[in-house]
Image (cartoon, rainbow, N blue to C red; front, side):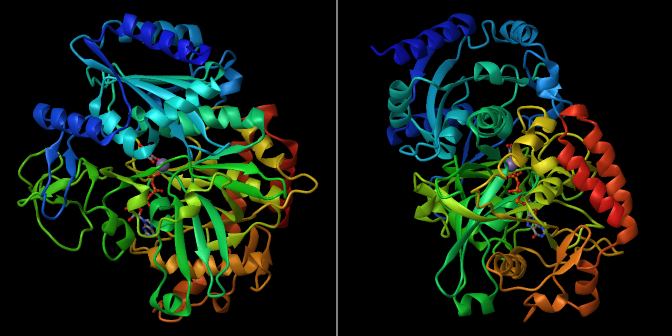
Length: 581
Ligand SMILES: Nc1nc2c(ncn2[C@@H]2O[C@H](COP(=O)(O)OP(=O)(O)OP(=O)(O)O)[C@@H](O)[C@H]2O)c(=O)[nH]1
Ligand SMILES: O=C([O-])CC(=O)C(=O)O
Ligand SMILES: [Mn+2]
């Protein structure tokens, strides 16, 4: 037996000693194993079978009503020194956190099966990929991890070869919101999660490993782990530019990753290729460019708002082999959510008879889980072990006012400030108030595994001789008018903004310089067939000087929160812009 296998076996044995499961099952990721788990969950009520004619191999999971989103107030980064976790994280002393978690875990798997889930984040043969093992007592988590990661025998073989892996321990416990913690120990490469079965809290490969632990590792190893989609835009000349974009949770990544260009663009030959919709690992390549992989193998996407009109690619991948969590369901057993253009809900997300007066049929954070391979726009380049070279990075958020439709950062340093300064309205993806504007640097506020001050410095460090870095942009699809209506049509029409960005990359498009960045004039965007009135477009592209002056003051205060860990270069960049306004 290799020493790696011995260390994995020892860890599994020690967890079993603590949690006292009735049985231990090592997951191989096979179809037969999945079929047995599905049988089990249909029998115990974890899953409801959906219409086999319209949705073969699709299932609905109704979670505990108080367990429907990430819990940021119960999520901790446990480093030896609190300053290493930073004011952007909740911190707990590692020894104390282990004491608390051990007490929760003691005997928690009695009467249950403990599943050992080896997984690989990223293509199984990629040097950029990293492995982990999640121990869980939830078959629902196993079924989701099988879709979201390269899970099973191949991952275990890689772990036995490599040795190092992230140790994740998860128990749904009693699903009691008062006995719930999501703990990260970046210095130990380990994660401990208790009391929730929800996606970001329980599928430990995703946010816990691929963002919080990975961002910490990436800092010391010279790469970046980011909350970004990756998309390829092919122009009529057949050249594909890859773009990564960071938007906070439920702010449009899945939709941009699967964009279908407007009719005129399609006729001209533009195509869009999906690489990833949530997480991006970026490494500098030998040629100085940044290369990106999607560490995930599936999509855990927001259901409400997904329709034939907004995201036909997603609809096409959701009619077979998918798991739906907390959606409504029609009388004939088809999944249903708000925004769908057909069907009528019979039951709501809690399984009650649907009553509009009681609330929505689908929970606002209801989700689908589906293999990336089922997406019509998924590209084989997503499986390339080297990753794809990035031409542009986009930062975006939900801002009802102030932030224009698009602007281009002057250079890398300015772009890092743009990312660090991001703010967005909170959404249903995390428990708590919705619609409150908060700073969410690089859309990583809930996900950076270390001090944001150090994180900004790490971002700046990529600008060095020989680097051929992507151009950085900021977008805002969510500006609202006086009546509270979105001013920009969004979705497929975001292609018009992408075209301008890519033409800026290749030096073919015009821009106007302003203190906060370079903006297109209305005439610089292709608005053919858009049907947007000139005044609205003008407003979307106008710089509100007074508003930005106040914003720069507020950004200055925000950067001070990280004290002397905030790079001076970033503060100077902000001061320069403020002085110009
Ligand atoms: N108005 C408008 N809404 C959009 C646009 N793109 C996405 N949305 C809506 O925003 C919500 C969330 O979008 P997603 O694309 O699922 O968000 P995400 O960033 O992938 O979210 P996470 O999976 O939580 O990280 C959905 O209800 C979408 O319909 C857009 O361009 N305009
Ligand atoms: O992790 C989750 O639960 C879903 C997600 O993508 C997010 O919240 O950003
Ligand atoms: Mn996300």
